[in-house]
Image 1 (tube, helix red, strand yellow):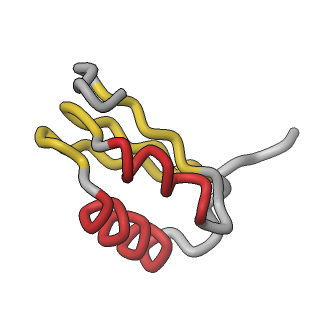
Image 2 (image 1 turned 135 degrees about the horizontal axis):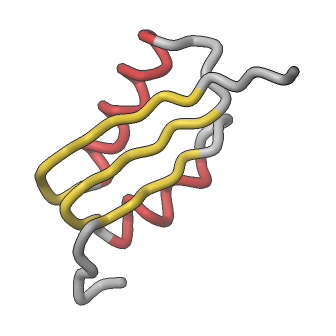
Length: 70
């Protein structure tokens, strides 16, 4: 049976691009063999959503609220 490692991060705040960089860096150090990172946040900036595809690992951003930029 296939096994996947998924790192999950919860933030009760607005996700910005610098915060995304911090989260991805910390998760890749904590779980270096992760197949995906899922970030659950209050809301996300358009720059953070656009930057999610710039990493070598799939990043999924799940905002609870939509923002005017989305």
